[in-house]
Image (tube, rainbow, N blue to C red; front, top):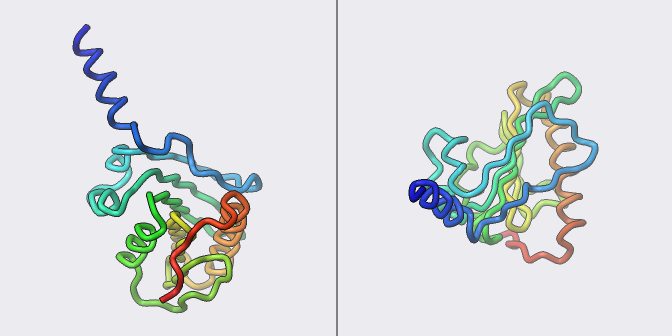
Length: 163
């Protein structure tokens, strides 16, 4: 009986102070995969690298697989504890840009050959696609749909200005 009590207490402490509801996504998205990771569950998604996200105030991650026009996209929606921490984790993962800060709805955005990343308030978004530049327009549509929803849910949320 004490083992059960200990396990229950450990679970309560693990999830206390973290967001327990999944990150919302647009109603029209029909993912083939949809998984949410809260608190220490991030270790189950990442094989290494999780500690870096915890250092930047990780709260919740929702991972979806979407398909559009014959392309598949892995959409990672990270909720961090502050806009500054979302911007910090974004800066740690950007390299070799094709384009930077071109989207109106994002505080920051970064396009590389196989990934579109952005920050909006306390959210860090990563959209990964294997088909290279021909899949970029679909990734931008996905990102803009998510950012539109996010801006509608959190009007006037503090963000990190471009520097």
